[in-house]
Image (cartoon, rainbow over all chains, first blue to last red; front, side, top):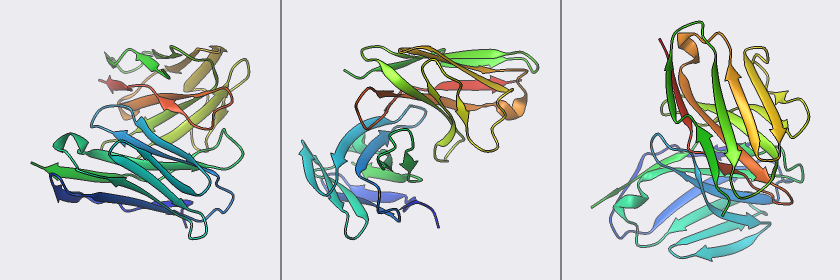
Length: 111
Length: 115
């Protein structure tokens, strides 16, 4: 079993839709959770970073962590064609030098 | 803030030559830098983790004599692909972890094509 599971998609939605991207994990020691956006042929860009359980909002993006279920989500409101990219979740425990990445979900927002 | 640069952004070389890729944290000090490789439509594959002033830690299956990593300062790490072959063609991405921060910031990547 992988440490982090993420549906590869592709996920195709119409412009303006609410998008929900999810990851599950198996290691209860994970404390730090990140979401990255990667456009084709570019390096990943950090979108959201959260610690422990709870929600964090930044503009159209909301990150949610449910440690009891070992489940994290990224919600994108009012999705735009420019949101079309691959979204990677990542997480780490107290050893900051070891990060675990999901395989990425490819999102396509149609105009 | 938290900008990481990579140079070059793309490189084409002949088989057997060596290629050096630089990774710099422009506005923060990075105690740890990571090097990844990514094949088309695949996820990131961690190659090695380097801490400033010490030897890099390589992931299983990554040849340390082929992929030389140097982390000489808190803002610079280099990856040298020695005696490159066509199978080394890939997208190489570095990332840097700032001091006292539990995340990493990625560079834009370097596309390597070995002919």
